Image 1: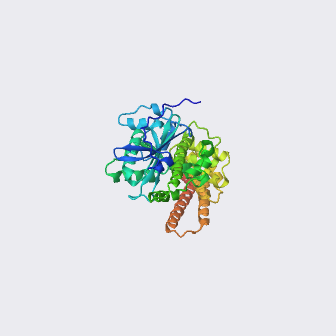
Image 2 (image 1 turned 90 degrees about the horizontal axis):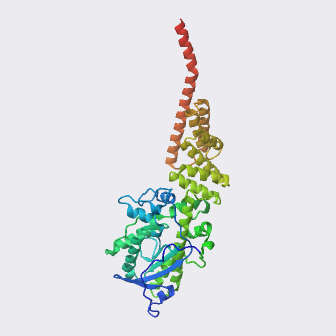
Image 3 (image 1 turned 180 degrees about the horizontal axis):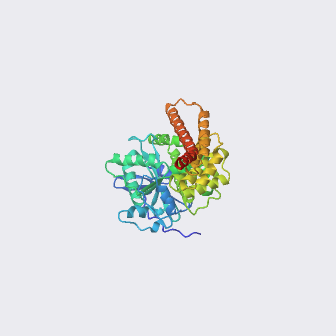
Length: 447
């Protein structure tokens, strides 16, 4: 038995539906929510899994570093819930540092095109409560109930202004903002931050899975069976708008029960995905059992967010535990570049030597070795040797592309290497003629 984290939310009471008048509400297990704009359906459930997760400050910082939301620096060694807020950022830091004030959101809509004619007829919300996940789904029985639904949505976001979505920055939230605007009465609520998990998920798992749909991540990454996420007989997303339109035209409401279950599974998968991503981004997290392709994806993610030390460690471990052969040259290239940026020239040169014979990356490796021997070792003969080898590899590529921009880039690259050859020959000849000039000057002085 685990101690509960606080009391369950004191949600406003719902009116029980009249079975004869509203069979849809009875089918969905919904209550009638009412405000001054009217009524809509509300379906509420609580789940013990996924369990509550509290990310570290470092994980939050990495998720926010390229976010379009407020950029707030968190101390990775501290509890973000207890971080003192400076003047003007108390609301942002307080909500962002408290996962119980985060709101998971997923919508089901009348179409995927967006625009003023697209409605969100089902808005799924979830938040952490009592160590588990509280889910509330707001449903439109008719388009006339939209004002009532949006008013309740605005109240929920005001309570929990940190949004967590999957592709929500591109689709869900812009659509809802548009619907708020169309009401001309309800202002779109302001967000403290918006975590769109599609982008880190794509960086971490696309190499291994190819597809990063939420249900694929549930099956291959999260362990759907362990979490109790059963999608047997799940509704195909492409059919959801048609099911809703059929209901509005007087058809059977039965397929909408599957739509509500589909939305519910998406919210639970989203909450579990957040926990998995945060565990990978946590500095203290263990990576021993991770797939080597996932480790390589993590390395690239960390490198793009300015964490070269951790990126190097993840990439090295990926190579050590068995990264597939087609990715190994790319991983070694990343290690060489990381070592070069860190100033470890000898380690970078060692890796470039390993890559010099590669058919794809060998030209870049030869060019990097030419730079190393010219600038670091002052060995102009070796530098010239690797520059000429890079030129030879460039010539072997041929003129295989019809893209004029590709040809222009190739010509510039060729000219750059030729300039390096001429410069190195000049420096080699100059270094060989220097002792002769000194000897001639000494003889002239003796006379």
